Figure 1 (tube, rainbow, N blue to C red):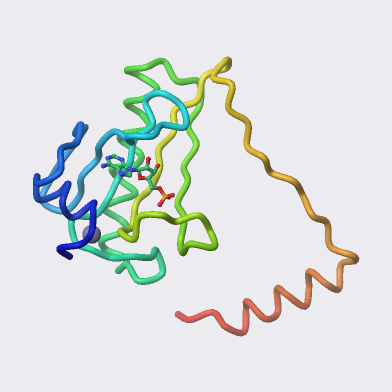
Figure 2 (cartoon, rainbow, N blue to C red; figure 1 turned 45 degrees about the horizontal axis):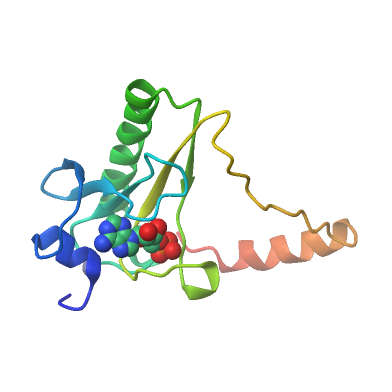
Length: 139
Ligand code: AMP
Ligand code: ZN
């Protein structure tokens, strides 16, 4: 994709700080880190959403995600690692090339997830939603 910033990074026409590369996957430093050491892992083939991406490509991406997370622990002394991946602008996706955020976490890093639970009115509300999801599941 000629207008995709991450495809340009893969092609080398936009600079990046690379962490790992093979025939199918690239890992590089995020230019706007949530926590210092924040990395992105992308497939070299252009897919927009997780939902569009073939299983074999996802398997290669997630294996590199785990390697980067382990390296953040071993190399940076991260106490934990958050994995984040957005699909669609409503979900906060800005770059339309599948990417997994790998964010090293430290006890004093100052980052807090603004995760506000919104409880169901009652169990039947959750059950009705679960039924709709189950009915739409594809193999
Ligand atoms: P998202 O909001 O999930 O689409 O995240 C896009 C991420 O790409 C953000 O965290 C940006 O900081 C990052 N990003 C955008 N452009 C670049 C770039 N040229 N090099 C490295 N990271 C980038
Ligand atoms: Zn792309």
